[in-house]
Image (cartoon, rainbow, N blue to C red; front, side, top):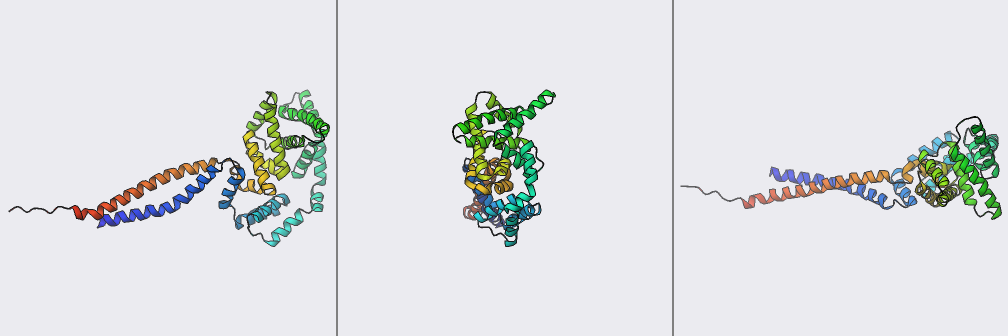
Length: 324
């Protein structure tokens, strides 16, 4: 009887564990299946990580630092996912994003960034990025790198390549009445990311190799993806995503996410980080689930077998024959 009770206890324990293991495994499997769809991948992870408390926390942090863009992105994301936002927080975000307030806070720094390409905050970075949409930004950057070369200082070869390509792209834009605008926007985003320090060394190396190795079509595809991301989600969201981009495939993922999420993209990347674009964590979870599922299945089978043996043991006991 003791063996039977022990077997039943183990069977119930493993059955209870299966109730926890199976949903985790299903979620990990869904993430892996959605690995090529950045928008679907983000939605699956937001289902488990984003709630009303998290939105309130992120909004309070953004409002405290007067970050209207981040606050607006989280409100848009919350509305899209039917998460309640307190009216007071919503009103504060509207005040921060009013056109007059934004201009008063950053007009001077925007102008300095536009003229010099140097930035100390988001307003200055916006000005520097805006200047890259014109030939002025490219001429300015080429001149600065020429001064560095003349002084024997390190020269940013990628910035030189991008500025030269920008001058060509600007001419093509005017000649074709705006046809390559996405390429021009991609150059602006890429140069801004280089200044902001969010362009990874691996991505920069791959792009430089593509530009100088005759793979202009690949480089143009990357620039088009980055331009589309910046146009749809905003320059800052594109910068945030580029922290996690290493190659052309990553740039394409960022473009697809931005196309699907629009103004929500900044908040999505702030919440999920690299997980908004890639499934590296999901692969680890899936591996853990496979091991846990195998152990759980072994435990269930072993426990059921032990319970069956304990139930049937009395039936096959042979009576002892007493000798006279």
